[in-house]
Image (cartoon, rainbow over all chains, first blue to last red; front, side):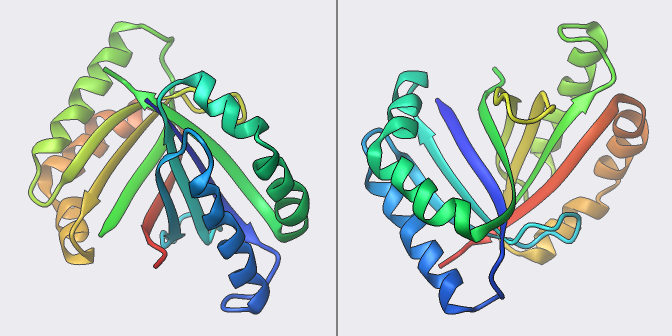
Length: 97
Length: 97
């Protein structure tokens, strides 16, 4: 299992229509092949500057790469991510033991 | 549901006895009251400098605070965390919708 996560801050103000559009577009990534346990999350900790998170799991690296290279994912990056995201950090996990 | 996560880098070399001791001590946090879905994770992404992660869930903020203030947690922080951790980032989530 590989868990791909990204925590992010948008350029848009909280509760804005632009924020809603970005999150709605991100939610559609759930339907891509290989994506499991997709979650759209609100970052609530006071110890960082991020507001949202996405988390999803893949069975293996091949499935993860298939998602990364899928045209709907690369289109999401081009259309929404590069325009809307101010800061982000990608963190990928596998079980330790 | 609140998911408390922390991603971290240890001061110790990979595979060292000190690394094992830290992770074994961290694993014991699973037994503390209120802790659900505890996970010890390996950070495998190339886009950050962290090596490990801990993830756990709490039913609500009261349970999270109970964990934070539990003597076994504060003792872990004093005994292991402050000595062993070089860098870390805490990220806390709740479901977006």
